[in-house]
Length: 173
Picture (cartoon, rainbow, N blue to C red):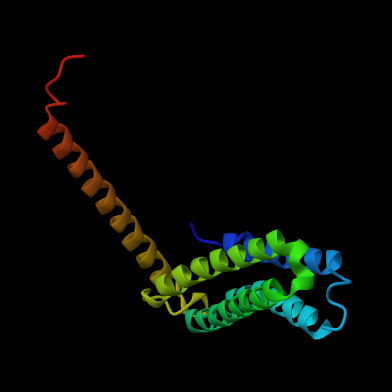
């Protein structure tokens, strides 16, 4: 599926949910952050950076720039995860342990999605929408259709072979 807007990207949606959960924790743990306001601000800024860099990279129009901003987004997500370890070790945040662990888990999930997306972009011949002509777009879509058809045929052959070997094709129903 090709996405036309960053708002439709599942990883961007996850990043927005992540940032909202960070802000919710900040609100709940307002008194626990007393004396460590920079920690709160750093976590909030890094959380916002995750979704914003996905959006900015998506809007740039080149694959190279998109990859660059996805790496920045991964970095911000990693920064948030690192900050959850600090929060988790501070006794005053003990009653928020479940929320802190949830944020860490969400950060890991976002990073895995970004890593997969980055790797798929690295393996594409498309330089980005900015450079894509109508002829190249049609050629790329045809190539994808052929690859999908080849995959379906491979699966069909494997299924047929399995049924043939198991005698399932010859059994009466």
